[in-house]
Length: 435
Image 1 (cartoon, rainbow, N blue to C red):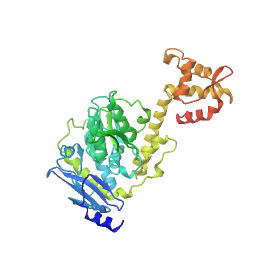
Image 2: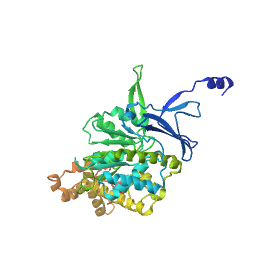
Image 3: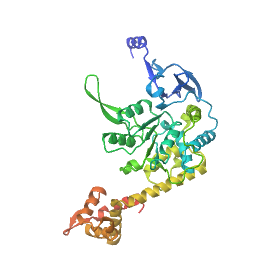
Image 4: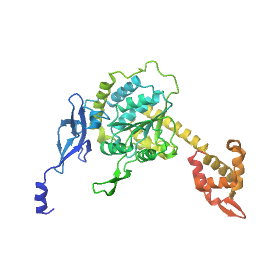
């Protein structure tokens, strides 16, 4: 920079930037806090490994000044985004986790193991940006099974939790996720067929991995279309009645099936007034945990689970990396292995899984030669004829082979076959389904 540029830079008036959070390379953490009683916002600033101050403004290395979002911002004033009021001593990590789990146990009926998983997930939301991948949490069941109650309890503890539902318009969800980050709490995720469903599926598909924004076309003041990248990475907790059609999206969730047992008698019918201050106190302690622990959080490769699908390992690793107790980690890993087994079983029962099983059997009997599509169809129909109301044609099986399983077929001696050169691909597909 030449001398004239330096003079110009020094003379530039500092820009006041409304801020929500910031992680600086020098170890400084800045987080927005909100005192609901005083109706004031401020910035909690940690510069020395957990030692913090609450400040009205923070000057950064560029000379600009960070200021808190205004307290009259609709999202803050109406508690659409849940914020802490100030950092409070969190104690030991195991004590904080025990208090989170006790809070959830008071207000929500979750299975004992998922209650532990949910407590660790709440903790994960406060340090999720220390990782490159995160899983989602899902509560699935019919109406009246406690899904919304669970969302309210979990959302009241999560990092910058933002509440929305299938009835919400999509645009503000994109903007809040992009501006606030934090945790999306999404009720009634069984969206109808619409543009909104397609947009939310993009959020869910892209949101587990850092650096995968969603591009949307925005019109600027000059009436020009100007594509904008919206950051959607971060933890998400959703409630729904059914399944997503996209199996890749299904694989991103850790799911609790609600309503599979009688409701515990000690669960209050209505949430008591005491819940709100209890949740605020836990959010304050969780903020202190973030300020003290963020730069020490690391991915732990030892938590990887042998033999499960890479996707499940990828998304679960951040959660497992926070589990210090070896026995609890072992139990959660066992739960994930069982979930992986159930997923593989479901995939084997699909059309493509059934056809692939027939291909595997045909190659096993072929003694390393090409396999006729007719032979595959005969094997499929022997097992599944009644399931489909009659035998399926060779052409139908051929379409599944080519379009779904991506196996090559070709004509040989007047009949269509799967060539033996496709055998390694068949073996790889079979291994993925645990065949």
